[in-house]
Image 1 (cartoon, helix red, strand yellow):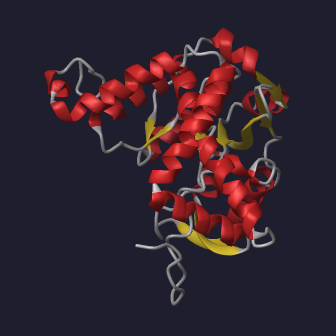
Image 2: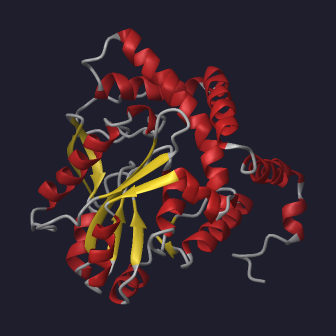
Length: 309
């Protein structure tokens, strides 16, 4: 087997990989638990871990203060605790994404707007499946494969064992190989073949190929690749958002119509349009967005840093 796909290499028997093996085994077991247990145990784990992960907790507190200034201190504290619980549930959601059966997942999800994806795929020019970094990210992707196979955009993980496991599981459920994030030719080839490619542009990757546009009213370093890729390929941009519903009601995946008049030729306007779309859906379940990410790390010239060292 190749270096990229082999989990059987003796290299991965080294002690530094034992915690990863333990975690992968635990995830497979967690996926077998009833959904109600997953929610209860996941919420408890998330809140407990939040007590010790003080740096990430402070990052989330900063983000919530910046993005929801209209909330009281108590309301933001409640939202933070709900977010930490959602982060714990995300561990079980990832386990379900990797190991749950299609039958189990179909029993947990309802789709809205599936016809929009069908219409966009019928054009034959490919589709950019646009979403954001929510705690439901991995499971939402697995849900979407019940509608349409797609390529993922792949960034190597620092831990080689975890990277290979993640890559194999995603390729298994998405039914198409991942595309390295720097492989523009491979990406355009996939669109030319009329395929769908998953993409989430809402993380801070520095100034390269980014613009400062508002996100919750804050000048935010935002990737412009969605507009650029749509212009180069002619692919339709179809947003989708996966949201965990209250209680044990399961999940809703909202598939929106392909963005009209996109790209517009105005890179800043296109990028802000995507941020506004994300804001709208974040506000539907704000605890389920990835607030522990330093979304505002890169600042405009002359503006102070927002996060503690």
